Length: 259
Ligand SMILES: C[S@@+](CC[C@H](N)C(=O)[O-])C[C@H]1O[C@@H](n2cnc3c(N)ncnc32)[C@H](O)[C@@H]1O
Image (cartoon, rainbow, N blue to C red; front, side, top):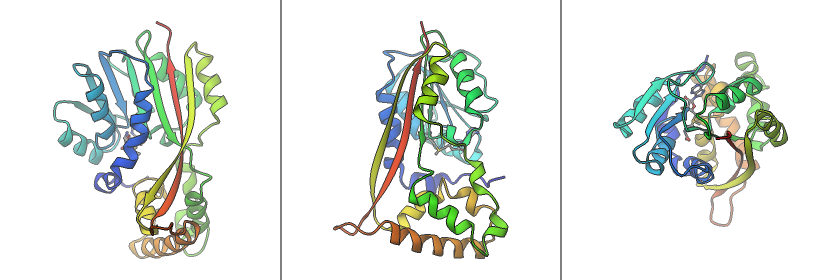
């Protein structure tokens, strides 16, 4: 079981993290919407985009982290935020848009989950999702590499299992097209200039590193982070301006039901 998310750490790179949410929303083919749901709303950064795009709509954010919900409620007091796990979430009203930016990689069984979300939509509704597709990146190879070494391996165990494997774009296409949806899929590699190798580690401490760090004692966590940062520094050398470029592949899916 992971400790709760840290909204302040997550928001440290909010501009970079919100960029894919903007790009996803820009490709949602809806002129208007009455009911909108932001699954895995986090600190409300993606919810805020939805409120701006659909003024007058009822926008509900859901998340299974109390800390993230508290941060979202503070940011958008006019919206409703509900504690709920995506695996069991059911809408009270069929939404016109289910928006899921950077959350479904934490939720298992996409073969059942995605058709279920699609079937929860109002006629003509849209399921829009984006997931990091970065498990093969050096950032993640190196966290698995350090986690497999002593003294951390005995405590961490198999932390990789916490994250769901992102399927190929062709698998997602068929999974949703089989249920009659019109599907758009694309993959983007963002290249984020970050100030230092430590900044890359900070970025990941808020997300992908959590299952690796949570089981460790404070002492082991510090030694793990030192070793990991040293390897990150070698893998992502400084550019001409001293900053490091973090390549970050993400998969986008927009599926529209028939009206
Ligand atoms: C990477 S953040 C994304 C936040 C925001 N949507 C954004 O665009 O930046 C992932 C969020 O999903 C939430 N989350 C992870 N697993 C979840 C689950 N099974 N059910 C609901 N929320 C979940 C986390 O608590 C976290 O707030």
